[in-house]
Amino acid sequence: MLRLETLVCTFSALCIAAKAELKARNCSEVREVCAAKGFSFVHVPLQEISGEHLRVCPQGNTCCTQEMEDTFGQRSKQEFGDLVEEISHDLRSVFVSRHQKFDEFFLELLDNTERSLNEMFVRTYGKPYMQNAEVFENLFAELKRYYTGGNVNLEEMLNDFWSRLLERMFTLLNSQYVITEDYLECISKYTDQLKPFGDVPRKLKAQVTRAFIAARTFVQGLSVGREVAQRVSKVSSTPACMRAMTKMSYCHFCQGMPAIKPCKNYCLNVMKGCLANQADLDSEWNHYIDAMLLVAQRLEGPFNIESVMDPIDVKISEAIMNMQDNSAQVSYKVFQGCGQPKPSGMSRSTRGVPDVFNARFRPYNPDERPTTAAGTSLDRLRIIWTTMQHSVVDIKGKLKQSKKFWSSLPEEMCAETRLTAGNVTDDHCWNGHTKGRYFPEVVTDGLTNQVNNPEVTVDITRPDTFIRQQIMALRVMTNKLKNAYNGNDIYFQDSSDEGSGSGSGSGCTEACPTDAAVPASEAPLVEADRSEPMGGASSLCVPHLGLLSTLALSASALHMHWR
Image (tube, rainbow, N blue to C red; front, side):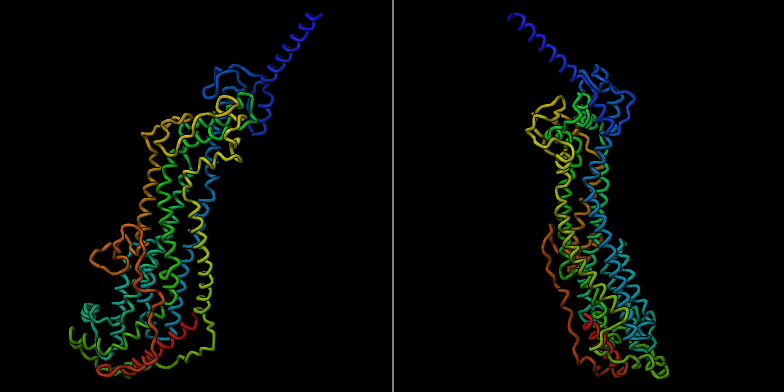
């Protein structure tokens, strides 16, 4: 009786084992999961078959045909590229949207500033300004050309503007003489000695160059960051990487275990091998981000482009007042150096000069709020600039978040919500061979560290040329950003000039605080007694000068009230 019971138990155990083996060989779950993922295989085995035909997955008994393994390889390549693009989407969107926003603001600021100056000067100076408006139009055209990437030397361009303005004003203030082109050329030689516009050109040059260098370089930096992020996000995978991705993502299907996920550390080794070149971008990317953050400070400080461009009409008007205040001394010194020009032979009344400077502009009433296009456009710009100040804070936060993005990419891709089982000690995950714990150590980041990667064969002697090009682009941009932070435009380094601006150097080889020689708020106040012309040689043009001063004072008071 005991012997019979033993035989029955043995038979039952064998039956259970046979059923378990039969269940393990059943591939129906693989068929269902493949169909749910959109695979349309011609044939999926009902039970495991010999895996001698497989080239990537283990060659034991398998639920995969050659067609299935090939299709899994193609799908792995697509999913790998799509996942990199998905994770980098927010980064790319930040650079695309912020580049567009800042670029649009700076261009609109230039347009509105030019419009404001034109309308103010038309009301204030009338016909004399309109007859010489191209001097100011050229100024803004060159500023726009510089901002949009033109090969413009800001210092030389601003010097040329003041020279042209001096020539026009000298001719206007000495209209009783015949001023020839040769005579004007002689005048330009004495500009630095004469200082007809006072200290305004020097201060404005320092402010404008720093502001425009920072604005242009910051927008260029956003453009470079955008291009690098977009290009590097489109990964090209090596055959070794694709084999590793296929093995990690789909070979457990062939083992009849489609529901399990890869082990976390297993995934990390695969991704570090596949993204080894991208990780090498990280160091230069971090330097670039640090330099962008430095220049962003310049968009908030006293040399930000809005605080420089908004009152530029008042500053130029102040320079005009300085010129007319000093016209006697200027004319005297010019006559000494260039000789006395020939009289024109016509009096002022004959030439119609008093008609040009009539009092057709009523005095500005400070109780009235301006309703002109200039006033409303400036108000709108201030609202936009307030928004932009928040945008600067925003972009600084986004930039800080993007540091170490490329080296952290494997960790992001291997997140539990994406590819892996999550818990690195989990015994119920796919380790590349079976269900069980993954024991190899995770390799460190970077190409040279992949020499011992257990999952991906990486040729560390052949860096990716495309990634190296992006590293070089970041390196060049970082250098430009550091120069911009120090107020230097690397296109126009000139050791002969020790002043501020695009042609000078601060002496800082690394990013360092800048000595702001001229705070943006330091524009001298207009003094009330400037409405009286000076005596001496200026008596020839007293009516002209007195009215010019009064009009300029009114314009300054009007603009100050708007602010």
